[in-house]
Length: 177
Image (tube, rainbow, N blue to C red; front, side, top):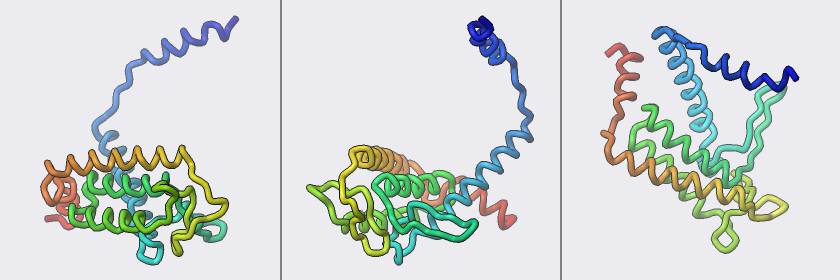
């Protein structure tokens, strides 16, 4: 019978007013921006010409370093969105953003495909299809969704200056300009 009233308890708890101090918001924003910058650094570190501009599917640092030199359409789509996000957060200039995107998309063009569809797994150093070779509707759908988001995000860039306000603000803070 007690569990029947659990919804009422959850409702009452959710009614509690929460106050957040401005310095707490600032601290959280700094922490989140720090995580975002480290995440972007991962993409920059691993998206190299040796990897055909693709990031590995996963990277393990501990207990021993391991890198899975493979990627999928979902991973490629997320990588494209990470480039756009880095621009939105002011971590990259428009020129560098376009360079990253061009490199990745040129590599996508060179991947072997089946009737225009990306296979599910590729080796990022050789661009060979990994076995078993198959087309995933889920990964293809994810990739398409990421491409749509990228297109719309890039159209938004038309409204932005060459250097974002966030980048200028960060440069000022970092270099005390």
